[in-house]
Image (cartoon, rainbow, N blue to C red; front, side, top):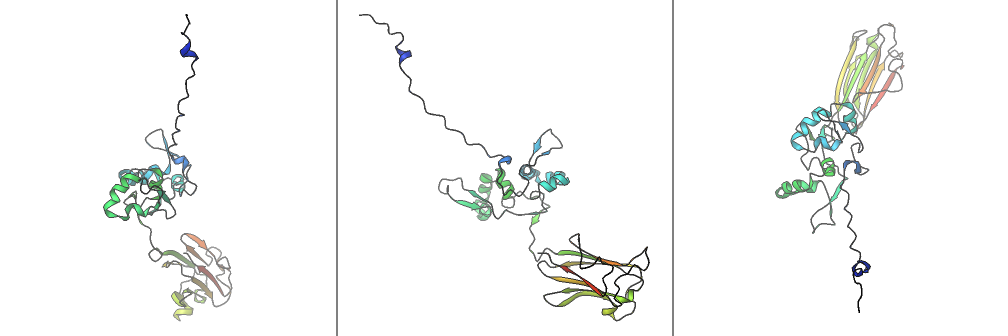
Length: 273
């Protein structure tokens, strides 16, 4: 009995092998979560190479962070898109959390402060967690990504509100006075003019007088300009009209008038918190 067995191996079905396990994608800056404090999709050209980088690159290398911020954050487009990275103070994102990598705490989410909370372990934690793009952005303080010219975020008490008050008198300066009042305390911070000094010529006519104030945050103030005759700072001389203006943090804030024709008085409310 003879039988051709040359094709047996070909006819025997081969059992299927295990399907390859898909490799999870490595997070990249383009996959940043929606609460990214910088512009997550923004890219800019490097000065020294034909390459584009995201905001996180600026502070990714701690030794080069200061120089990179000095070089790139000076550009208005980058400073605007990378607002958190280029910010003059350094802080962690209080809303950001990440999952621990060790097996014992695999299901535990922690905030940035955990990295530097334990002084004995902070160095090893920084080495383990701070090289990732997300913690480089959100945990800038805990990871030591701050450049030397950055400090901690000032408290409301430490951070003053900068106010500039300009008063250009008209032909009748003896009619003009002003006062800056702390509304809650009911106290006058500063004042000037005949209403307060008792002198008839407290100001010179057709002259610019400027005052600068560093006020407390989260406190209500009112700056009022008075005219005893009741015609405001009328432009009696067209080339040198009288007026007043108030700037809070560089932005002009107005009362009920244009700062010229306001009758007996006009008040500007000041509040920044």
